Every structure is written in structure tokens, then in C-alpha cells.
Image 1: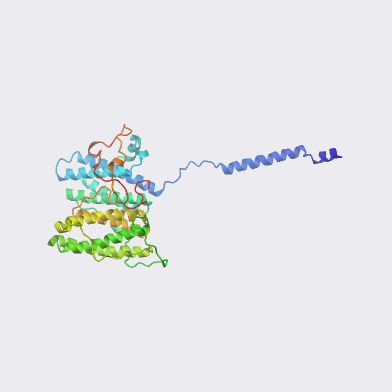
Image 2: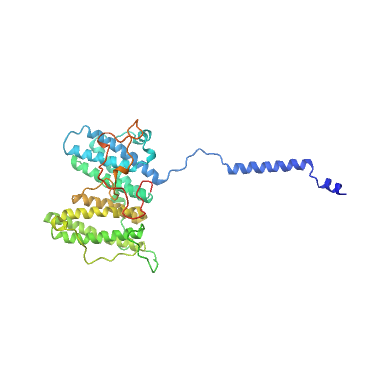
Length: 381
């Protein structure tokens, strides 16, 4: 009896064939789903990386153009301005360079052919590059945005410096006309009833905004004091800058409220350096220069309308610094140690540095870092 039952339950040969066929189809179908065919299309490049690469390409092209013009400029103010431009662009290119790009082949590919062969063309190209970097800073990730804003600000000011040395028309700053400045009392969404006061050294948007508020509060007080100690011509400029800082203070306070942050209360007075009594103009230059890292932090730690305000503010503060006689670094808003930057390789050398007058940057420049903990401070940040 048992033998008969086992014979009945045995799977017929055709059934085993059908089972194997079904399993094979399932395996084949699963394989097709799990192993898709390679389309051959590379993944899209992130915006921040594309913006950095474009900035590096333009900066290297401008550097070649400035170096070519410098070799035939002779002596005088024009030659000095060109050498300064080459040094500026070299420092910026090294800051924009990734270690993987510090090879002869990468440099040859990126640099391309310099096309700003005349003074007017170089000024126009340098200004256009700076304006583009500032525009890209609005959308890039924090660390790259700060780097692009620094590069763009210095390039726009470098173009203005060259135009002045060569008695050429100063290029129109397109960035200023496209930035939407915040209203003094923007509409705000409902905020929590309790907004914690951020640590002054913490890397948050609230902390960066609070630092910017304090910077402009101190600037208003300092300009009020300086007005009484400057000569007539300088006092006129200081009065205009005082009005500017009063407006900027209203704007950054409004941005702070729009971000549901706490606005720091102004103090009755601020301790000013002894330099204010001896040389108020130089003190104002130092004051404006000290605001650059604060605005750089805000660029890196903010987005949208606040980011746009900070980017334009960085350029404006650097311009005021120059007007009062300060030396604006190659990357305003960042502190820089040239020894920590990758060198620009010479073609044919895997680790060579840039040749000619553009091969080095001043070794006295401080380390590239943020003034606030956690801020992105490198191209990859």
C-alpha cells in the first residue's frame, strides 16, 4: 500500500521541467531588475562643485592674461597694479584648487586659453568673473558659498583698482543691482514664544546674525565718535558711512526677527582702541576690515534672503575698508595661510608651484579658518 501511495505522489517528469523553467524565468527577470543596463550618462555634477570648477577656470585664465600683460607693461603704477592682480589671482586659484587637481594635466585642462589680451578686456573680464562668483554664492553650499563670495568680492575690487590705475571706466557692479535687499520690517511667520539665545561661538544662523548685529551696533557708535575727530573731507565720508551702518543695522535686525532669533540689545557705549584718538581714519579702516569674517560666517551659515544680504554686505564692507586705507586680503571674509594651500603645478611637474611672479603668495597671511566653530572653511566644506 505504501509503495502505491509514493508512486502517486511522485512528480511526473514534465512537472519537473515546468518547475525548472519557472525558476529560470524568475531568476532572469530578477537579474534584469537588479542589474540595470548602464545608460552611459554620467551623474550630474552638484551645483557647488560646478561653481567652484568654473571659478577656478576663470581665475586661471585671468591669471594668465594678467601675467602676459605684466610682462610687457614696463614700470610704473600700471605694472604694480598688474603684479598685485597676478598675486591676487594666484592666491585665489590655489584656494579654489582641489588636491586632486594639483597635477600638470589637470591644470592644462582647466587653464584653457587666456583671452583678455588688452587692459580694457582684462578689467571687464575680471569684473564679470567676480560678479558671477557672487551670484553663484547665493545658491552654493555653505563652505563653497563663503569661498565664492570671498573670491568674487576681491575680483570686483581688483577690477576697480586696475581701472583706476589705467584711467579706464570702472565696470558696473552687476551684483548690486540683482540683490534683493530686505525690508526694514519684513513680514515674519509666527515664532516660538521662547527663542533660546545662541552661544556666541556656536556655528548657527542665529549666532551669525547676532554677531552681525553687534558689528553694526559698534560701527554706528564708532562712526559717531570719529565724526568729531576727522577733518572736513573725511567727516563727509564718515557721515555717509554712518548712515549706511544705521540702515544695515535695521536690516540685519529685521532679518534676525524673520529668522526667529533674538536681537542683541545695543550698549550705551563701546570700548574703542587708542588708535581712534591718534588716527580715526585708520581706526575706521580696521573696524570695517574686522567685519569681513563676521559677514563671511553669515554667508556660510545662512540661505535665501539672509545669504543674499550677507554676500552683498561682504563686498560693501571690503569696499569701505579700501576707501579708509585698509589692505583687503585676496579672500575677504576668510583668514588664509598660503602654506596650507596646494601649489599651482608647473606643466611637466607633478608637484611644482606656479611659475614667474605668480608662483607664491605672501607667507604672512593667516590660516584659512572660520571665526566661528563649525563653519565650513575649505572648498570641500
